[in-house]
Image (tube, rainbow, N blue to C red; front, top):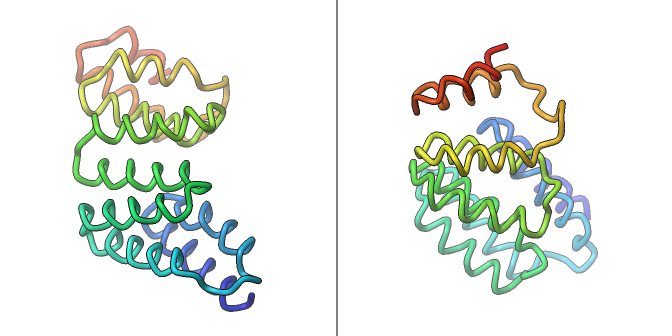
Length: 168
């Protein structure tokens, strides 16, 4: 159990370095399964995370696909990771598709909704970005940089009226 907690802490630390909270999300699952010991699925997770950290995103997605077969109960977290890998490769449409799979299972996941909206806007999918942002509750976005980035993406798309609300 102590080893699993240590690995969970390492995942959380690496996620903070990336500015994403991937490690924390998986860490809970590690704690739940610590009594049963380290299983094959954890080895696959290790390979996926290592590939992601090293920028080998296609390999990471392949490992996450294997993990999905081993642990379908982790589907939202796995799809989230796959979505994040597509974002890293500037494949915004594919990222939005994966992140929408998370939202279909967890419609109230504000963090994933905001990231999906940002990816949609960065990928030139203004209407999809609007739809995703409309699903956010008032006051969920607390980071002023997030408002600025959303506004910039709307402005870049020539949608000045949409942009203004994120700058004020």
